[in-house]
Length: 173
Image 1 (cartoon, rainbow, N blue to C red):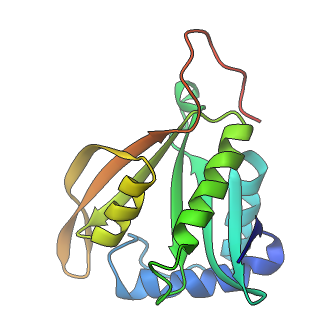
Image 2: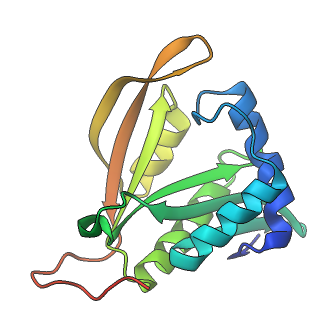
Image 3: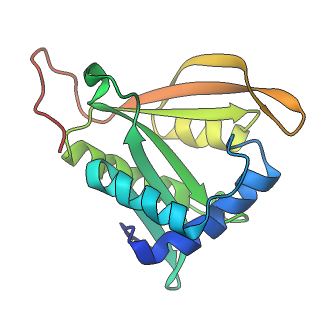
């Protein structure tokens, strides 16, 4: 396994990994899978301010993880929302953990203090991964999204990327 920063050339592979989650699951609330061009724009945007990493197995992209702004308000600038996606069938192979650990290190290096993750319920594999990586539950939005013919709940969890300080931290970069 190799984990590295995503590049524009990875957009088609990331879009292909993500598409079945969009079409066939409630794990994401997107209705249409993004095109490779849309995915390339997302990779570029996240990489400028936060991070987007890919997992390679046998020189093929098999998963990705990224951090993006949690909220646009200035007070939230040290927090980010994170997500991880693996090719279907790759759960419980260590790829998600490895991607997240590398992502958290990169985000901490850039000055981010807190990571948050939202998980559509039910999704025990994702809940378990986040719990194992130190995320603590902070609440659940009930019936917040409609997908595949039903209202869906989203559980939120957070973890510290760097210790809190009593003075204003340096700006994330």
